[in-house]
Length: 181
Figure 1 (cartoon, rainbow, N blue to C red):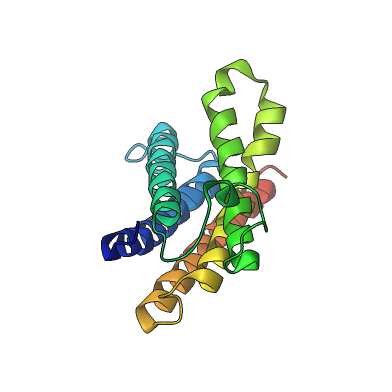
Figure 2: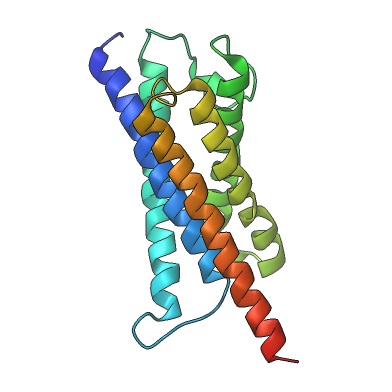
């Protein structure tokens, strides 16, 4: 099925998903700081992280479905899950498939978190950072709008936002280490 609306939906879900995954990644990085204030309790950050992540996974599903349904570019359903098996831009599609696989693992373990001990859950959950980075690379390489001014600004803005969150987290970690000495 070839429909320009599928192509637009695929592009749109990709960019919305990038923003949502960036926000989820930032909230995840900052929630590990275990800090809270009376105006912003820790459970608010964690709840927002979970809900934004769930919304991002929903957009991820829509992104994959629209990519597979749009026959303008030949992407088979299994190529969305098997990294580097595609015929259309296999490297860039492969990064997206790898990111998808990692996010499926992170999502599955998050759903089963109450049945898992913390250490294995955390080991898998940390893969979300890799999934975010691979998704970003996927978008840069395969995205039709990644070379436009607005596409590049959004992509590099997301990269900068996560970088700033990591710097804030490291600063908070350094401050708490100094305070405990």
